[in-house]
Length: 128
View 1 (tube, rainbow, N blue to C red):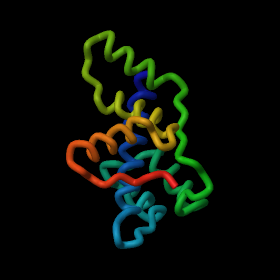
View 2: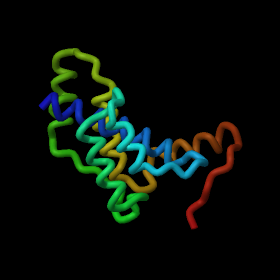
View 3: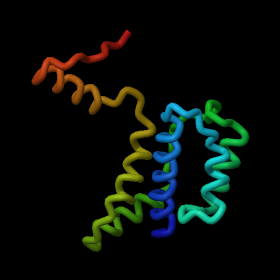
């Protein structure tokens, strides 16, 4: 089970890295980058092979929704860490990020926006 918890963290790190590359102004070919990273880079892995394959079939991943299930292993791993008093922030955050992926227009984000508007007069985006 701990293997799967580690996998959660690795997948989250890859996801964030590819999102950062996609947001860059350079129009990176994410399939090519996944392939390149898998040729002797310290981050090479089977997960990168899978990322390369996913980008080959759908370069912008436009056909899938960013909703990520969890099958329980990550929960078990985080609970085990808690029970044993072992800090595992990456594993915990990776699990919580999966929960976050299931929310559209999260209430917590609306609270944050409202608080910023209240204390500093910051602009909020209103629903249309």
